[in-house]
Image 1 (cartoon, rainbow, N blue to C red):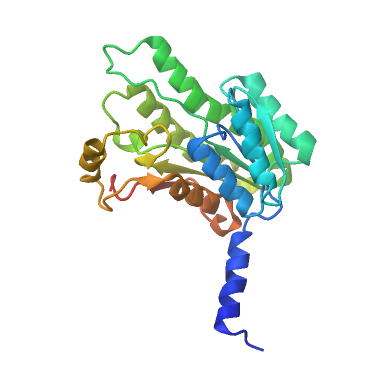
Image 2 (cartoon, rainbow, N blue to C red):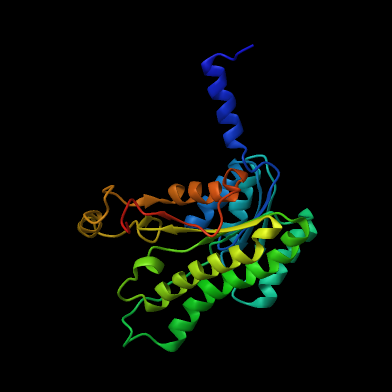
Length: 264
């Protein structure tokens, strides 16, 4: 018997909302901003989430409680993922707790902006380590387990700064461009084992850090965005959830730009 349209749409909505049912996910840098939104979106779609944080223990524990309230499991794990020992420990803790890791979202990142003549070597190295090195280390640790299962999803959060470049961000833009190269190379290495590797490149996104910008500055920036507005963290989270799901099983080595048309 054919379902009435209302019931059919309800069924479709239920199916779409659980596209990550029973998946085990690690999100780095998840205690706030884009990382937090990604963790909550994955949980809403049925995934259990390991919330990685470096310093914000209280925020991470509060997020873990929000996730468990959605009916899935959550675990907060402190780790400086720019350090090999910590990155390995993060993945090891996940596997010891849940038996496997299905999805990794490499979101941990930082900025230390300045023009090149005033940027210190420490500022350059710190951003490269936090953004790019951590992505490589966590991916390397996770791939070992994923290859044995012949299944995995890795989504790396890059930026349009890694595509277009941005003045005052030679360190940040280099790190994000490096993530794009890493994504494409790793995708080629592990595709035969059923693992996809993709990236999401946000443009201007409203977060706690950017919410205090004067209106005249945001209005000026909006003039260059075809859709005429900044994105929000949910825009990035939904794109990440799609690439994490089996709906994107035939997509790998791709950079999904979420920028309102800014970089086109």
